Image 1 (cartoon, rainbow, N blue to C red):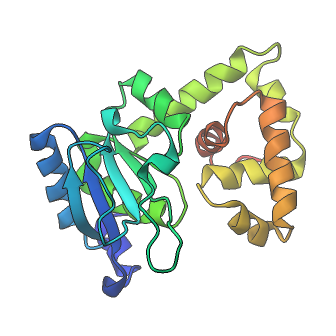
Image 2 (cartoon, rainbow, N blue to C red):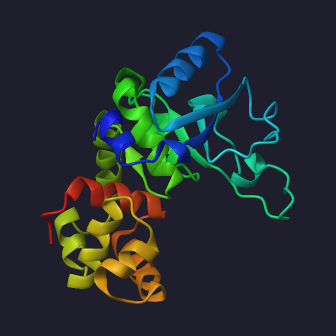
Length: 231
């Protein structure tokens, strides 16, 4: 989906409030330029570090960060509560090279919704920020290839082959795994499959256990690599 297509499906009055965090001023300016070119993003600030980011008056929906600026904990980027007494942790989209495997693996272990390759940022940033703001996962195609390979390699370290491990899944678990690969939430999966959200959580737990995966993100990556036609 192009930025233009994303914009057409997103009301102009409902832009995604985005803060940019990157320690390199030139790269930060480049990311800001790409973000401002998107019709779905409202850049409300940019900072050189997470520490410098205070949230400001306008609470952001998404943090668009460089690989070295990934927060250690989601709560580290939660602004102070406003008049409602509530503070929402912004979703995180990271801009990183697909060959930076150390940073990629670190991002997978954290609460990151979007992975954007700088070389395709012009096409991907708008879609990634919008997906993250809606609780979905976005992967640049080049990064998806690397991460799917990593998820598959975890399966090969088991006593059974990846195909045998996948065969351990029930038909419903396979449906859930494919839905996870689309980056949708448990609530959305529940509505699609006409089951309870608690049942989806149970299926996700069994998927992780049977496939030897450590995090939900790894299941998302594996499901993404299998594609919607796999059952």
